[in-house]
Image 1 (cartoon, one colour):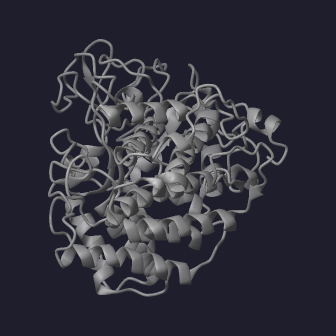
Image 2 (spheres, rainbow, N blue to C red; image 1 turned 45 degrees about the vertical axis):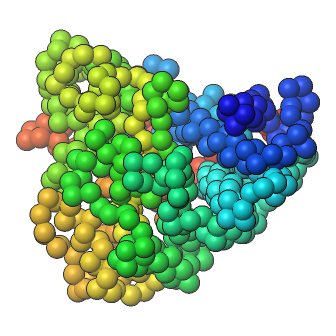
Length: 529
């Protein structure tokens, strides 16, 4: 009971902070760090509180971030209450975007919770060096995770390393933020174990907390982002990314790591493996009674029989170019059920048009109202709105794709890189197609891996680590998609049937569109923003 009470007190301390949490200090309700880490139980309590803040920061899509709509896989509604989403889809984000402030706020709440541990945990009595190092390692990981999100969304940001708040904090450059990220990740890699000894960090045969493998995988992708825009560090950092991903692969193949690909892509986002997915190097775990998230209904259209919020839908060009096979079948709704209870192809419409949004829909986030059951798109029952599916941060198939892409972009083609990419594609095809070979050029290998990663994680943005939009950001491909969306050509989606995007894009490109603006309220408090 003491651990629970202390954890809730720490959580309350963090949660009471407003969107300007790092701009203003308010002593009311605060608990001094001197009151904590005076007993052995306090270390576990502080870590429990950190994970509670982390899971809260990912539980709603306005918390996770709407910048995922900059990617070419996903779009939104042209009207309704979706302005905050549309601004990202249109590359025209304003500083008073109602949802963007939550994106910013939640990252700093995680940072504050992590700093609480980093700066004070060493005072805990009667804990082993191993326990202390594991706790510190996890805190450093989540701080790095949050700054990685910030630097790839806003660029230069204030860096907070203390529990004290400096409302005149200067901006740290992109290079400086990455230096902190790499420093934190080095501590996390050294301290996080291969496998945790017991619950709550190891449950149902999988690591529930950050493991060594998760850190190595995250580092691989971070190096890829540093290799790309805006730092453009190039081949050297692609080689670092390949090396770090290969460490994960080596540890799996020598039996040190338990991770493996699931045999069928349809299992990847299933309820059956939600709590025991061996493909997940890192996930965030939820329980509907205590810590649910709002993921399930975001991808349902407003007009669907099962209910829905209409926040997101697939982009048509991406759907059209997505290779046919089991992966595509498990990514999109096979049919949609409209208000009349009948099933239709997603492109169904009347003449003249009667539907506001005619687009493919992602099914990965759907949950049945029957607890634990798989969602049935043909069932007219209201769908579950309080989700308990595990949010997937990093999957093994992504590591395989990152490895192959990094090898290619470092200027070579290897048999192992080709083999890893074929593992991903063979599962997607449902057969040993082995379409990739060493006859490919390095550029062809890199682009094939980039595309495979996009198809693997299509429409899935809930943990914000390596979404399609972040892939496009690092490769400086927003501009190309911006120009395509301005044209918005009709696409033949079935014989003789043409459809185009509902959301219009206008204006002229400039590189400020690569980033979000700083939230207006925070700019008014900190002149350095």
